[in-house]
View 1 (cartoon, helix red, strand yellow):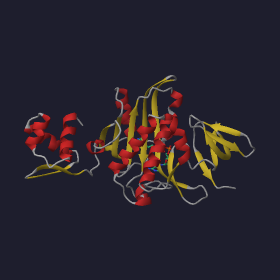
View 2: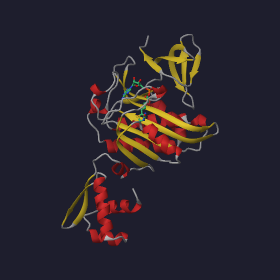
View 3: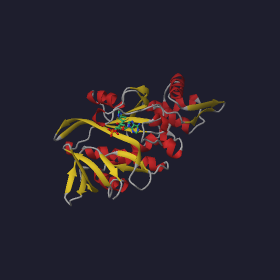
View 4: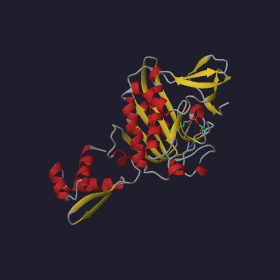
Length: 313
Ligand code: BT5
C-alpha cells in the first residue's frame, strides 16, 4: 500500500472525517481522497460515509491490504484468491530481487511439500511464502525453517489449539499420549546461494485454518476442527510477527523450538542413508539436527529426513 493511501486509511480509522479535511491535511485533491477511499473499499476495508464524513468500520476481509494494515512486521503482502503454488510465485519474485514480500493465497492448486510431495491447499487455509535475504551462512538457513515452525505453533496456541512441533518442522496436535498426532501445518523452505552467502530464501508455510477435515488427507487436522474458525487476517499477522521476531534474533530460535517440541523424549523412527533407525529423540543441535539415542546406547545425529513418533515401549 502506498504512503498516501496508508495515511488516508489512518485518518479514516480515527474518523469520522470529511473528504475536504483529509484532502487538506494530506495536501492532496478531493478527487484523490475519493480514489483512495474507493481503492480501500476494493481492498476489503468497510468504510461508512454519512453527513459527518468517512469512517473505517470493519477490517475483516482477507486480502493483501487488510493483512498489511496493523501488521507489526515489515512485509508487503501479495494476495491471490487462487494460485498454483505460493512458493513458486515467491521464487519468481525473489529471482527478480524482491525481499520481505509475502505471497499469500486463499487456495493453491499445485502446492508442494518436501521432496515434491503434493500438498493439499483448498480455500480457507493459510498458504503463504515469505521472501527473505538474510546475511547468514547457508548452514544457518535451517534456523529460518525452525523459526517458521515456532511462529506457526505459537500463533496456533494463541487461538487455543494445543499445537506442538514434530521434528523437523511439522506443526501437529497430539492425540492421546502414545505419540500419535494429526498434522496442522507444514513448512517448505527453498533457497538459492553459496556456502558463505544466501542469495534468497523462501519460507513456505501452509496451515489448515478454516477447512473441514473431510477436505484434508487422512491424519490431518485444521484449526476449525480443533477450536472453530479463526480470523485468518489476524492469524497470518501473528505468524508473520512472531517469525519476524525470531529471524531477527536467531539465538532464541532453538530454545523456543525445544519448548514447543513434541519429539524430544519420544521414541522415534528415522531414516539415515537409507537405513531405518529406532531410538529416543534427545535433543536438537544448533542447526536443528536431531540427536537420537539408539537402542544400543549409541547417539546419532540426523540432519534431514522424516521422523515418525512411536509408541513408548
Ligand atoms: C510439508 O511437506 O509439510 C511442507 C508443506 C508446505 C506447504 C506450503 S503451503 C505454502 C507454500 N507453497 C507451497 O507450494 N508449499 C508451501 P512434507 O513434510 O513433505 O509433508 C507432505 C505430506 O503431508 C504429504 O505427502 C501428505 O501426506 C501430507 N499432506 C498433504 N497436504 C496436507 C495438508 N493440507 N495437511 C496435512 N497434511 C498434508
